[in-house]
Length: 88
Image (cartoon, rainbow, N blue to C red; front, top):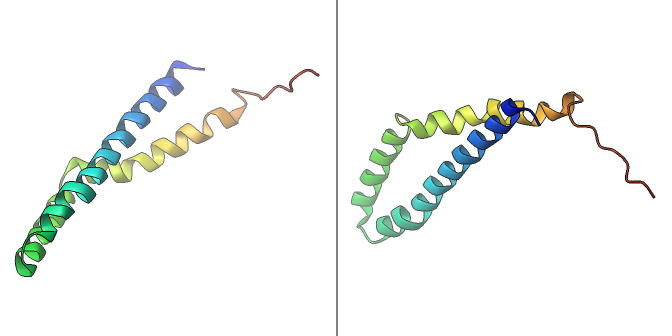
């Protein structure tokens, strides 16, 4: 395996782990906290969260991981790693 592919996969794993942590924190902590507030405060808070998410690194990772993943998937398919049949 080439060093480029290894570094690309390590970066992708770390970025996806970060995104998974953000989704976990949102679904666990933030949604639980919002359920304890009154209706109008929860709506206002959620609108502020939505505005801040689009300005932050999260969106760059969320949208930027698509080209990284497509490159990582296509890289071994170029004949770099051929599947050899298992001898009987």
